[in-house]
Image 1 (cartoon, one colour):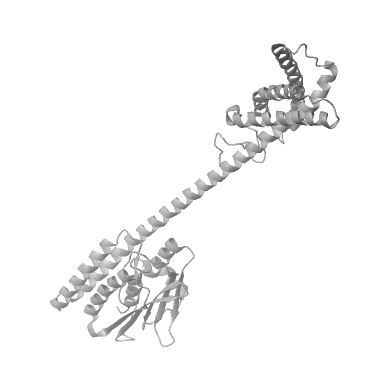
Image 2: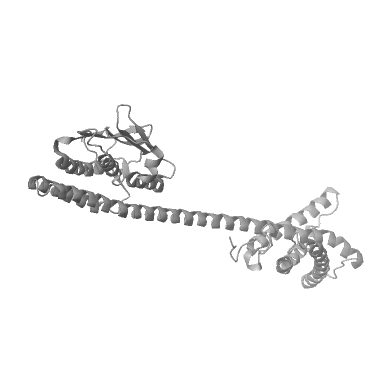
Length: 395
């Protein structure tokens, strides 16, 4: 990822950090306070050292000397920051930037020494303290540089630490933003997949139901009218819940009741469908129309020549914090479970919807019954809808 303009990491080499803190990036009041405290501590050290050696305390002269030294060094910080920013020490250029900064530190030391001499001379003159004697300047330059060189590299180290902290915060911010963006894209992708699957599913349901009605329309108008009324209720519910990827078990079973009316109206005495729901599952969420898909699949694959009466059981259970949706039939079963899961429209849609909604937190199992027939079982996380109203345990 490309760093932002405020990043502290080099775009040419991700492992080499540049000190890019500018003059405006520093809190100058804090820096000034640090230098003030340092001046007080240094003056106090000189004063207590005099007292320890039983010499007359010279706090005023020590404070004057240390404050002018610290404050003149403070005035040079903007120049130091600009130099560090213009010539950062990297793994790829340290052979020439380190000697360059050594020269810069010497130049800083000379300039700082002259600044201290000028500021102290001026202060002594203003306060009427007489002539200020700085001593032999040839020794003074060497003596002061021992502290000035340390000060130079300490400022560089502090800026490096601050720059690294800023880059770490920036990386965390970018990572959080990327994670949020990825999560939003995944949510939109899952929603688009669900919408596409629902678009494929609803016409499939509608055409099958209309075919059932047309097959009995001229034989029994009463049955056809009853089926149209049930279809009307189903369509009203389907359109009401069209935008919802999940509904409550209560709502799903209301839809199933309408579907059972249609199936029973078509097959009359040749079908027996039972719906069982365990107590405490009414408010749990299930994928919209998933139970109907499983029921429709059982009806579609029933072999009437093998079993004259179609027997189907739809069960909703709660097992180990998982909601189990199970449809059992007395049909021919399947010869190849994997082929049934990948080739059948209903089961393929079911699996794709489960992946889109739950990722890998689901189970879809098919197993043939020893006495004949198939059991299709779907297990999903038991997630309640708090605002849903409870219904009686018997459906």
